[in-house]
Image 1 (cartoon, chains in turn cyan, yellow, red, blue):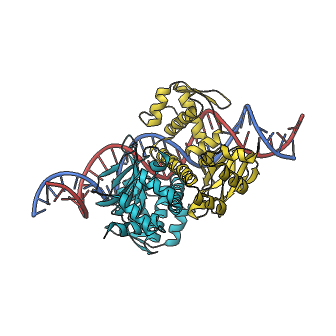
Image 2 (tube, chains in turn orange, red, green, brown):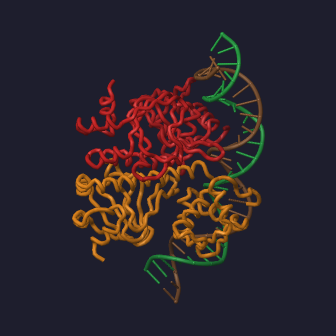
Image 3 (tube, chains in turn orange, purple, blue, cyan):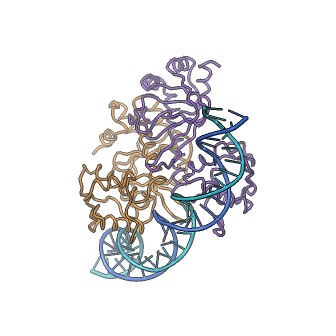
Length: 233
Length: 233
DNA sequence: GTATTGCCTTGACATAGATCAAAGAAAAAG
DNA sequence: CTTTTTCTTTGATCTATGTCAAGGCAATAC
């Protein structure tokens, strides 16, 4: 597939004329990273941003003791690393490929010039950043106001929504990663999954498939209306 | 003071020509809210955004049980409530005045039209949102990877920076609010303040003045390099 | 200016979830 | 294909911080 078609597919660039897509394709630099390879680190100077063409990337923070909090996982068509481009500050977090990933890198200068010329690109980017702020408020709410079972329930709903409203979910990431995304550790996640299974809310077969059995109870859990019974953990 | 001067003072609008400042002053609607009065609620449709002219506003989330997590506190010259303008979604959180506050309200349509015409305004707005994303990553890091003493230490550093690098800090908000901002409760905050005082890191006199005594130790605490001794809490 | 509400602190206690340890299963790497 | 790494689960234990209660003080409100 040629570059210009790949660029036209990126939601951030929807609504741009063929001419500007051509410009973008000129300034984009292709990059391939292996599973586990870092893309940038917190504190690095950011001279451009990235868009995932294929594969997946995690954005995360690390504590001194090595605990990790995943902020986002980005897949096909999603941009990341834009903050330094517009704020002029270093990257606030780390980025690493979860699998073999193809990226386009857009250097800051050329991209900002293009934004100056194309209001619709500016508005698209404003929409992307606004959406991301929305996601962050949800993450903060989860971390601060919900307990781990509630966060997990909310994640399962999100997954179900993402996978066409199905009840049969394919966990797209390992449980280690899911724990990091939910702000907890794999042991706790494992215990809660088995507890939800015992209570008949989900049925977690092996190999990362989870079936939602009692959608209503799962919903109440996600909203904080009920909790898992605290006994025999 | 006339409206156009107040608008010119707002950092978001820096670099705009007199003509566009005039346009903004035409579309801005002034609003005064009392201490404790709500400005918008989570889920409300957002048809415009706000800028604080004087006073202070908190942006917060509430759990079903009534626990509050403050996301931001905005003061003079700071915009808030922009997410719905660009993402087309409802407000993701609540806004309420902490004291008597004067606001300018900018209706969505007119403002977006102006952005289309003025690339520098678009770039300013992108910078504001990017900066906010940066703040959110720090908040998530605090909540997920730091313990309460570390978050408090980081907040005290921020306050000291904000107040000209002084060691003598005026707490600008109540301890109830500070607890909510740090993702904890007033009792815990109170205990940690008295513990830091006992360990000679700060000296918390009455009436919300705090003096930083041992800046180095406070810094290590904020970075997670050390912890408060766990004994006799 | 008095009453009421909210702020702040301290104590006793409860608990969600982290840590440490261990072991089998699955998946990458070579 | 086989070795090594990573994932996943379960148990025992620890701890940071939340909950409940109560009292004094400060600040709004009427």
